[in-house]
Amino acid sequence: MKFVRFKTGDQILLGLFNKSMTHIYELNHLIPGKQFETLNAFIESVTEDELAILKEISCCAALQEFPSYAAEAVSLLAPLQKTKHDVLCLGLNYREHVKETAKNLNHAPTMPEHPVYFSKRVLEMMGPDDEISYSTSGSTQLDYEVELAVVIGKAGRDIPADQAEDYIFGYTILNDLSARDMQARHLQWFKGKSLDGFTPIGPCLVHKSELPLPLSLDLKSYVNGELRQDGNTSDFIFNIPTVIADLSMGMTLEPGDIIATGTPKGVGMGFSPPKYLTAGDEVICEIEGIGILRNVIR
Image (cartoon, rainbow, N blue to C red; front, side, top):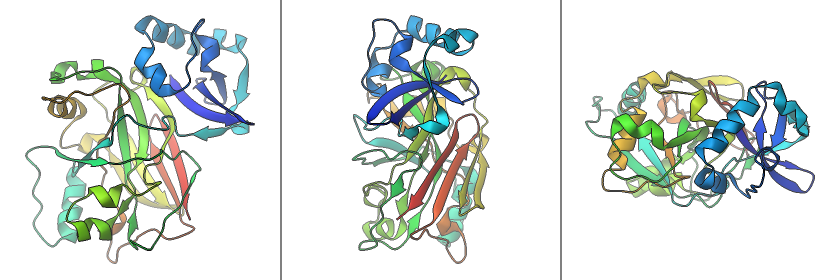
């Protein structure tokens, strides 16, 4: 199941893609007696029985009985517009990215023994095809990072790794845009990752039933058509169950929380000379089984 938030005319609606992703069905028509204003609200209150009904409908001809919108005729928005908390991010979670980062900093690569976390403040999520407004007044080194984002489905604390999948709702693509010079100037990552518009996500939120653990997903990024990143989640240093178990140790995860799982090698700062983004650049992030997230820098 692939859930979306979309705009048609003056309406913003929640939807469910058909299997071929050619049509979108309004979510509030598919579950009798329920009305959801946001996907956050849907994640928090949908029952397992209702999800089972949606899964059955989405996989058969019964879906065609409901009115639909042609995907090409609507505008997809960020599936989750806001988060209850900051996005929880992993740094240095791909082996090859650790190596390229070490090379950029002129020291020998050292694989982290424990997950490296930081948070990313988000005023509002940007969606597929949204333009990213980037002010060069405080930064001139804008970078891209394609990442698999995990969306939590139910509250939990001290979650055992072997139960982690029970607490996941699904997955989406996140571009962890980063101002590298700000990161260097402030000696930490928070400010350089948290400028307005720096968190595009989408194009949809894929339910975990379509991407069962363990994951081995190809992920790529392109800038103006040039392939920059080409990795696979099998290069994770810390896999998703390990991360959820570690993060939830003494800290409650809540429905709608987003965990960005790190980026593979090929970021702009990893090139010599660096290939940072400038106005007019088109960035495409793609993850197998989820889709394409496209944004243009302005």
